[in-house]
Length: 208
Image (cartoon, rainbow, N blue to C red; front, side, top):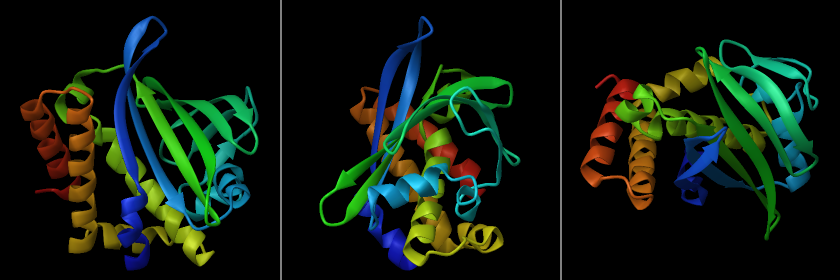
């Protein structure tokens, strides 16, 4: 896993704001570059037979207007789809509704970048944990995608979970949390509050 992890410098994180349904929403964007074509990256993110090879099993109708369900996680409705570049969907989990926007961007040198934006109305959870609350999970998911693309094989969930609890995996979480903290500060959040939220998020993920 080390070769993929050390390519983390290709990741970019931003935090912003947007008005959604008449209310201010927080916007968390993560992107990562991969050594593959845009067509292959699009397929990896939209083919229901391939998504479980790096993320979670998915059921439902992956068409505009259709509903999907990720095993043990979120479900929602596919809102738009413009192959092979972008799709949007609701992200419904624990009684809350937020939104995701996924784009595939060709890059020079036979590479492609996945950009994922998660939009949510802030609540007590956001106030306590900040953008890392969703950002770290997406960092881990995009890492899994990288493992799949690099090897062409299915990521073993048990192996990935074991690695996640290793010192290397825990450091990945700490680095991710720090990255989201920096993005939060760059977006105008009070530095003291951003760091406190990042510390709580790191502690939640690492058990420290």
